[in-house]
Length: 397
Image 1 (spheres, helix red, strand yellow):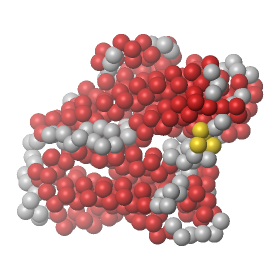
Image 2 (image 1 turned 90 degrees about the horizontal axis):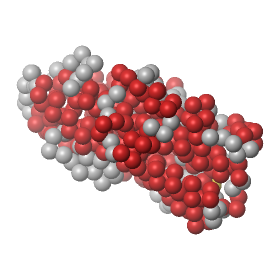
Image 3 (image 1 turned 135 degrees about the vertical axis):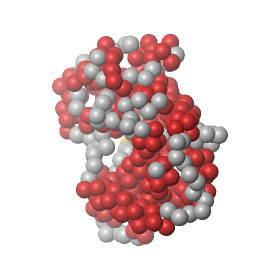
Image 4 (image 1 turned 180 degrees about the vertical axis):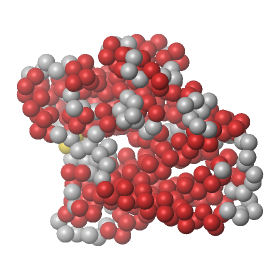
């Protein structure tokens, strides 16, 4: 995602607020001695990887393959029924991606495979997309899309643009042959990125034969991981063993920082920035009007990272960051759970009355600030989640 100055200001505010709270908890009687907790930290990391991260990426890879099948079926038989099925498949895959955003470090980060940017850049370069569609005349391949096209013309949002208008699937008759080809080529590129994230975290030896076959479809994808980024192969094992980290504590802090980063991004970049400027074009996922669902799923990803489990419902696990915090500072554990739940509720409240975030921002642009207080409350709730997670670091010292 593109970052803005407001995001930096938001991060600084979270850090300052967290510092202001630190002195209040230093002498907390509930806080226990956590020295020499290497085994505890190792168990937290193993559980985090095995019960949250890898299952989420597995579900993402599988949903992307369903999306590929639906889009191919649409290309072969252009009907409204197939168009609706393709749009629904996009939503399913999109949900899984947003549920992974509390762990946008390691393989998917810009320091390594840069999958986040490749799969989820926003805003799109629409004129470049239209030019590419016209220039290639249906000749664009998935291999070329993955290797050569810029981030802003591939990924989730270009496929969303081709499938949706104003929150609904497009009439199938509106799609040109060039658009259909672009859709399937861009979807192939998306599939490889989703599978690449899964393989990089889990290790190729730990995925199914079907997933392995998809990973091996594109030699450039394989080479990108195995030759150019071999250091992050089987990253789940590296994180679980704190390999390449200075300490067990610093590896656990990766989980904490991942949660803080996405809380920051949802509040500052995804909600506050477009609303404060009235810029509808900066509202992510507005072709499908799925923005608020995206933001909510990002907070669910924080909840999963903290409690363990996966999906939007989530099933807390017996070993997690939460169980560690609860044992050492029960009040903080309660606070974090409450802040996460409050954040989800306040983001959903923005859409009260069936409004999409696009419509909320559009109203602000046209001089109607009636949602200002509700938006501010959601932004503040995101900040509060980050502040609470910063406090966990004190328990690791």
